[in-house]
Image (cartoon, rainbow, N blue to C red; front, side, top):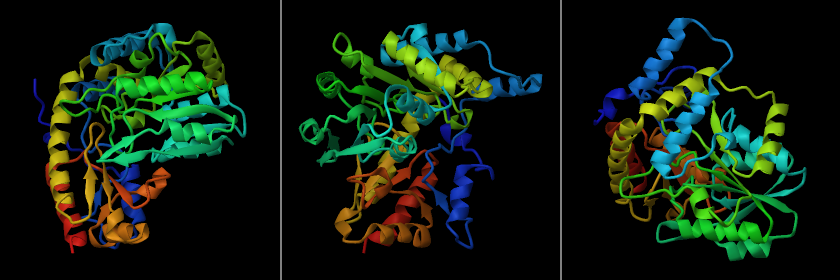
Length: 389
């Protein structure tokens, strides 16, 4: 069954980060501002999710969540169906979003001052949560070659001092949309095993894969080789329900699971009732909707890349996954502040500056493509008109 994704566009409500970002531009007239920064989709979730939430609200009960076994069953089935790997129920923990889960993991397994390794450029909240927990972010810059990022584990090995305790790995990668192969992930597993490093894998974009591409979930790559890892997934990006604030923390290593549970308990963690209910229903009945979504965003990817790649010296990295375009403006000879000023003031487009993603991000810009074709084309044309001369 195909879904008409374009007909599910949602109005941006006042109480949203997207609305806050528009206000923060300081522009007098924001009616024609295109918001492509905050990584929410502009589409409503599947109708089955909306119906489930509506039913819960109409019952009028807003108490504590129960029924986690049903949620775990839905997650196990989703992982088996979508990623050919099924976790055991006792491996599954929940958290108030994956950034919060990473914070809990930092406190569970590391100490203040420990080094936490990131492959940069990478999602900016990783570095922020590391620093907020008084740990030391260690950025290993990835190599960009012919439009794809590559890990340089030799470079990383030369950086090690013995103070590093953990790697946080983004798979698929944000930004850049890179899908890591089984072989790359096995090499990373060997590296972590050799250096006694705990590996956190953030797979929040694991379902947002373009046609003809295939994501390999880390446990398949590490099977029989390495178990000192924690896998994190969520329905929030896949089905645009980030306001539900929930995430899955999957820990096959029993000792690590006990440590995480203790640290999670110390936060008073209790699942968000409505997020869990939405997530469960989405995993039960959202597969066909997701297929239609990725076919639609694939068309957006093609529209945007065509416009951007027609600008001399500017290139859009070809996404394999995610809906977050990553554009290289570095060859224009302009500083990043000038690029961002032109985008906001002249093109009236809100996007994310690449420097916020760490080493290797300067003079890149991230754009959210999860909106209508009309808006994506308009954004591409505005960008081209500003930078093509």
